Amino acid sequence: MCEGLRPKQFYARALDPIHIGTGGYRLRRVDNSIVRDPATDVPKMPGTSIAGVVRAFAEIVKEEDEKKEDKDKKLKGVDIEKVFGTADRKGILRFYDGQIVFFPVPSIQGTVWITTKELIEYWFGEIKDKNGEKIKIPDEIDNEAYAIKEINTDRPLNLGWLLLKVEKAENGKEVALPSIDKWVKRIVLVSEKLFSHIVNDNLEVRTSVKINSDTGTAEAGKLFTYEAIPRGTVFGLEIGLDDALAKQRGINVDIIDVVIQAVSPCFKNLGLGGMGTRGFGRIELAIEQKVKSQGGETNAQS
Image 1 (spheres, rainbow, N blue to C red):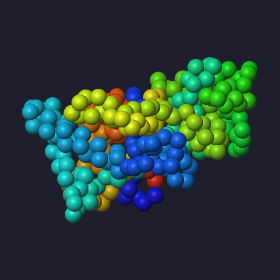
Image 2: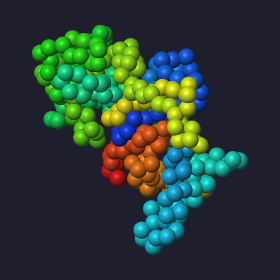
Image 3: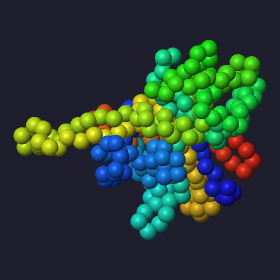
Image 4: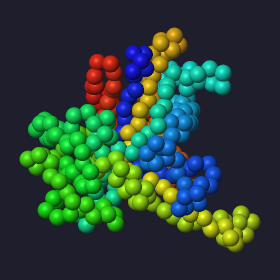
């Protein structure tokens, strides 16, 4: 990692289904499919989509600031063009694709959130229980589920239509994830191979019809289907800062925190992606943020 570009990690939860479309029809099971990672086929939040809404929300907040006293301004002294760039000048922030870290799946035990060893280690490092003891994760999970939080392991676990044998963590330990414990109740790890299949098999699919604006009625032959990432999904988001460029423009290095805290309510009220008029798109950001740097990771509370 370049020393001058330090990604900050944030966690977000979908309050509504999320639909970020591919921009056209694809040969899939629905007419309007969502963006996926080409390597894993797992849906994602494109960095361009995140960057676009963060800038739009920042401009809204900046406009609202003009009506407030100085002490109440959320983006006081922040130059939107210097931070986000213009057509002929790049911004100082780098927005990376958002990943699904925990995906909700219905089961006989209630909603279970699935993840993989690779995802949880990337986003949380060493996973530990509430006593601070490390939970050892097997190198190979294969075609089974590895329970790490509030899962009954006495019987097989169904994840949608799929029935898997459940392995218990060593000594029955259960993971503690302070940043998002309030969001996820039951967690199992599955293999990367199964993760992609389970996610794609449990996306939300809806059917809609185009409405004629003149008559206010459905148009004949205009029925279409579309998919979305379901409510309750937890994403990992990363935003990088070009330190050298920030210093050159006289911008404080904590600008990411300032901007994200300012626009957070907008994500909760306005959301991102398509189908917003159909109740899609709202997300909630976790309060705790994690900074990844050359020297390791530290936690920051907003």
